[in-house]
Image (cartoon, rainbow, N blue to C red):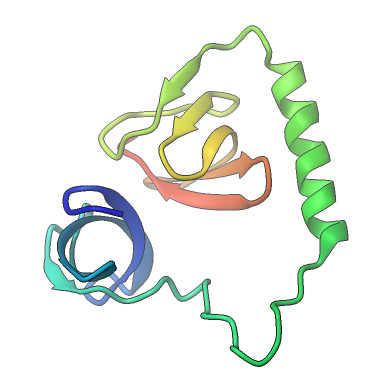
Length: 134
């Protein structure tokens, strides 16, 4: 991670996990970020959905859930194989069934439109809710 790269962080103003731009680094850790939604700058806070693993034990992964997401992703990508990939951006509009290319999460397909400005995207290993401009 470097300054000016994009990351997911918890926005203290929006009260959500959103895309941010890294503004400052301290050694190899993110120190400050700027929210791409409200454009406010604040200290970096890890996304609420991600918690740091405990040092004593390895994190437990539910392989059946991630495996079923991957199968669904493969099925959707195959059924939409003729649709071109669009690069993801906050200021771009997307429709149901569009294939997107996200810089962090990789290739995905839009499975649901959430009013007014969110999309649910099925990626290979996870389902994410992202912001967009309709």
